[in-house]
Amino acid sequence: MNRKERPILTDLVNEGTSEMEKFQNEVLRPVIKMQHSLLISSFKHHLIKRKVDFTDLTDKKRRSKITAVFKTDNNYKNFTLGIIIGHFSSDEFTFYADNASEINRRILQIVTQRLKDSILELI
Image (cartoon, rainbow, N blue to C red):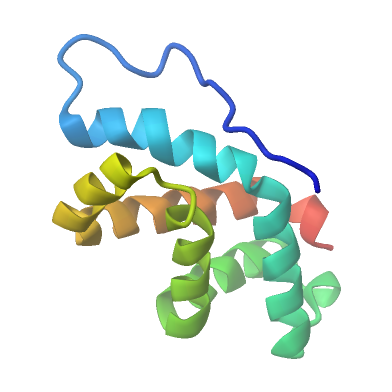
């Protein structure tokens, strides 16, 4: 079995950083980075399932499509959240449960941007 480990991202947490920013930088970003290849694979699969030919689209349309998927497809959105939330420890999940809507928004925002920055991997 291929064991994944969360990367340690440095220089993201400064004095005066809010709890939410601290959680985003110490938990969300490392988990999302660790799950990068799975996020790419799942998005590719989603496009195939929805019969979207990503190769025929312009760069601008590809970016719009990525945004649209996360705005309109609740099943895929929830699946993506599960890919990330499933890696939380019990304590992290407790913090998540108390702040779910804000954390979900941040997860989806980071993942959307990461997919846009990785468009060549999606073709």
